[in-house]
Image 1 (spheres, rainbow, N blue to C red):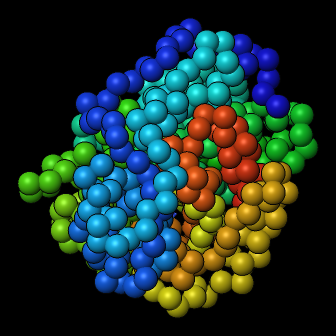
Image 2 (cartoon, rainbow, N blue to C red):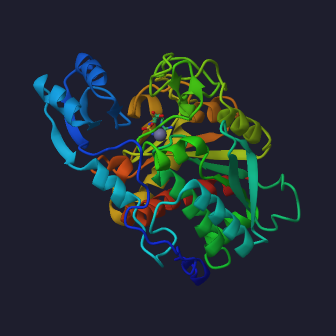
Length: 408
Ligand code: 0X9
Ligand code: ZN
């Protein structure tokens, strides 16, 4: 449970619809459709601009469509089962705030997240320290929070194994910004109260970077809720998919060379300042043991590889650790999480961060796709921030515990 001090951090603004967006989603719907084969998938991709799923392939797909796009879809014989009938209203609901609520009752903007990290540092000066890994393309500082006992007494405790948790490579995956700061909060609140957490904070270093793509994330608040990539202009388009830009087996299957694609990999490996800064930061941690990359949605827990269907040499270790994470996560609310390697569980995705962590840094690289399975998708209502983050935290505790034992 959250401590009183944090519950008292109230939001003074109470607005009904706080963030009117220039990209008008009036009349847009999210519909579930069905693709019989790859030809259907290609037809769909040519007809609609936003496919929401993680798994883009034959089978059921959720797409975000304008009235025109919906018409085209049904006229071409595709089924269209309405999942969200009013996307604009769902977005408004997601950004509505209630005065005096707890800090995880609403989604936070990038500025609010940074402010929150500083608040944690002020509240727990012996355990938490805010740091920066450098600036984004548009010049926003990318912040993280380091959590370990006596954080100020030593620059690095090399004998303590390190875990990194990063969120929001993909701009629109808002729950992926909240789950990391929830875990930071829990580690700090539960220290000295819960024996398991106390040991983790005492014996490990945990680095949490909640928004690694701040330009994209800000853009989803101010302009276009469904934006995915970063915001660097590339040719006549904008944006590189950061999760295709990492330098291990970059450029292979499941990434695109077209600047307009949602999975555009960039002109070269680590062409983007956001991934370059992360690489430098991750290379600076000699004790890096585990890394979590948080996404949404689909309720999955994934491990390498994304570039090939071959299994990693330590597949059994992943199977065991991730199996434990799944058990703990499902025990909370009965929401099920599917586990497996990226390539066979979702789809090929070369140049993703998990492959680089595993292949280059030789650390354990795991990735979440958090709630839900498509009913709300990226527009997960604010009431689900806490339960979804609790599930994420339950899994992470298993990862931290594994990290701690590994350090012995
Ligand atoms: O396409 C992706 O990058 C991931 N799916 S998402 O809908 N979040 O964009 C899947 C690729 C590998 N999965 C993770 N690293 N979570
Ligand atoms: Zn993602």
